[in-house]
Length: 65
Image 1 (spheres, helix red, strand yellow):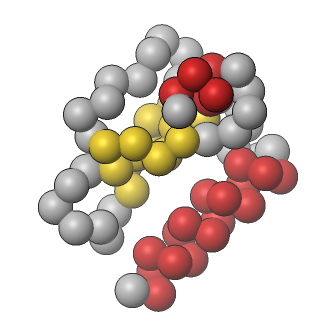
Image 2 (cartoon, rainbow, N blue to C red; image 1 turned 90 degrees about the horizontal axis):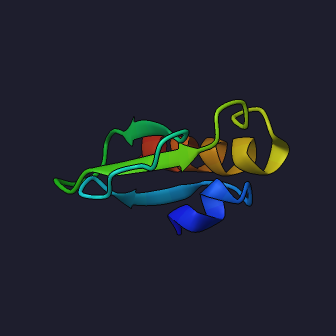
């Protein structure tokens, strides 16, 4: 999954035990159960429509719970 992120395909949601390679942005996703998850994407891609759409959907889903 992280390889796709490094290729610029989009973002990945991974467990907290996964360490991001150099150059990726790691953000903690709050409001989930005890397992830690992070959304990772290349710097500057947060405003890219596919990445922004997925991040927005995740945030909306999490805030609705």
